[in-house]
Length: 286
Image 1 (spheres, rainbow, N blue to C red):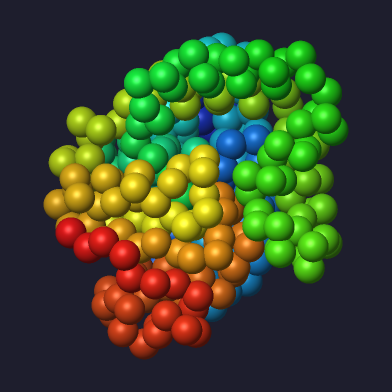
Image 2: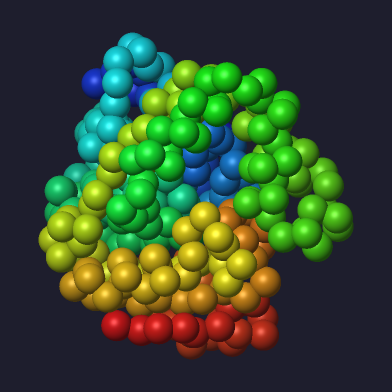
């Protein structure tokens, strides 16, 4: 059994204290959140997984309640924080599930420290944003610094969720918006620069953890071909295309936690999770 029930705890990290929430029992599972959010974004998914896993949802450096010394950082440093978290909790290895920025961090952890990752899920993420990533993300970071956070909401919400979900689940949309509004703009901007500089493609072949990579069919932040690329370049990868979803697939459809659980438990995909019940469709397998 975990040592808490969603209460915020801390371990020491390279750049300050790392905040995390821990719920459930079973094999350790670390959930890594997207840019400009926090571990609280995972709450609906934790509700689905805590009966089967010891779920740990940390806040990234400078996000949520985690500390930050205001020094520049890259994705490698964000990954070092996760290794420090595992060390602080006494876990030689754990499952990793990363969404968006969290998936990029998970690639870095699993590629540089393959023995620390049992099984890996990469949701709506990428190892590399492309040849124009640096100028694109530099511009985005500047907008984060110079634009008030409320004014950024329409852009974010349109990327995160489908129009149907925004219309039918306003409370959940507002919950995620609240996490975004509470995020430190300086940390958001620095993490944006980190994603722009990131190129984790050379790390993918070093990943030994069985890997499930998926993306929403309507995700124009990290489209499905990025999941396919990751799955094709790890030792044991599967890619799925999720129809009717955008960038925060697991938040929009928490029932996809069943798909995550099946992969983490090694029961096979999509056996026991027919497409009609989980809202997913098999795409490219490697």
